[in-house]
Structures are given as structure tokens and as C-alpha cells.
Image 1: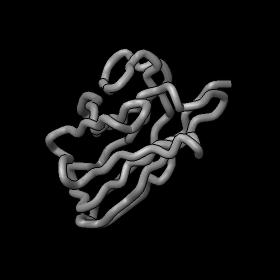
Image 2: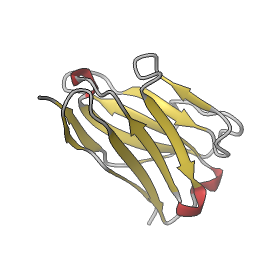
Image 3: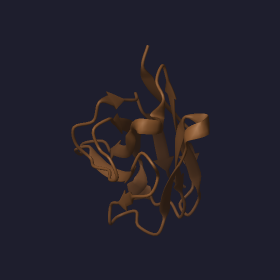
Image 4: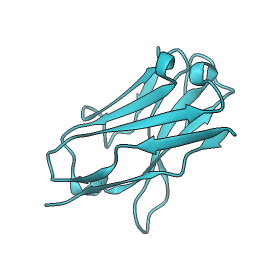
Amino acid sequence: QLQLVESGGGLVQPGGSLRLSCAASGFTLDYYAIGWFRQAPGKEREGVSCISSSGSSTNYADSVKGRFTISRDNAKNTVYLQMNSLKPEDTAVYYCAADRGSWGYCKYYGMDYWGKGTLVTVSS
């Protein structure tokens, strides 16, 4: 069964850090670009960051630039999202998704597989 599983969410104080993981099972992530998305209560889902299959190309939403870092370890079949200097407005369910069709770049649409999400709550 092909699936993505997110982990690493939780409750953190403003200014704190979390590292999210997106692990694949049933398939290898080597040939997939990966995107991280989030959906806050009452808001639409938005693309946060993405990384190409080789890791050579990354993209960040303006709201997280300089605070979040995406990386991948294909040997572990896992993609990470390091989140620093967290703000209350970062509170959301975070999802990862895999895109088979992109080579050398990444995007936030047309994703092939989705995880079920992990909740990040930033609050004092």
C-alpha cells in the first residue's frame, strides 16, 4: 500500500521549533518532488514549501521564508520540514504530498499522493 505518513507535530510556544517528517511506505521517494502544505481552521490549504526529487530546487511561501527549511534524505525515504521561530499563525494541520511528474523543480498542484496530516499548534 502506497502511503505518506507525517510526524513531528505538537504543541510549541511562540519562538520555538519543530521538525516535521514525511515518510513514504510502499514506494520510493527518489523520483518524487515533495510539497508541504498546511490548512488552518477556517482557511484554505496553502503550499508552504517544496523540494525537487534531487533536492537541488526548493521553494518557500513568503510567510515562512527564513524560518522554515525543507530537506530530504532519500536513503531514509523521508523528507523533513524544519520549522524555527514559530508564530501563532503557523498553527495548522501540516500535510506532505508527492508529485511524480516534476523533474528539476517542484510545485504545489497536481500531487499524486497525500498524507493524512500532523497538527502543529503554536501557543503560549
